[in-house]
Image 1 (cartoon, helix red, strand yellow):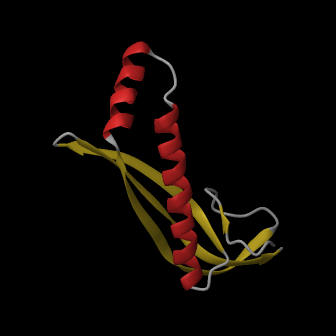
Image 2 (image 1 turned 90 degrees about the vertical axis):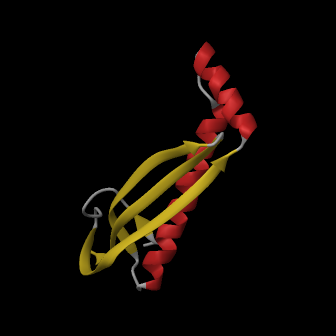
Amino acid sequence: MSDRLLLTTSSHLEGYRVTEHLDIVSAECVFGMNVFKDMFAGLRDFFGGRNKSSQDALRDARIACLDELRREAETLGANAVIAVDLDYSEISGGGKSMLFLVATGTAVKVARA
């Protein structure tokens, strides 16, 4: 097993067995979408096509939130998180837009099967 804590959306890890369930862990991340990204996203929506700045923001949010989830699990002594779920939301109002992401899962200890 690598030194990096393993994450999976599955309830198990192939080739490993869960030796201990520790606790539910979660990470919450909120990112502001600047006004230029919002403006260009609106133009892209109008004309069609992919919006690279929005895709980049989503990817960055996912990476940051999963890193935070790993840190939370490591504080419990886990070496894996199973049943990871990602929930995205947008919060907007007052001319501002925020991307909200929550990652949850079960922190566990695993060993090679």
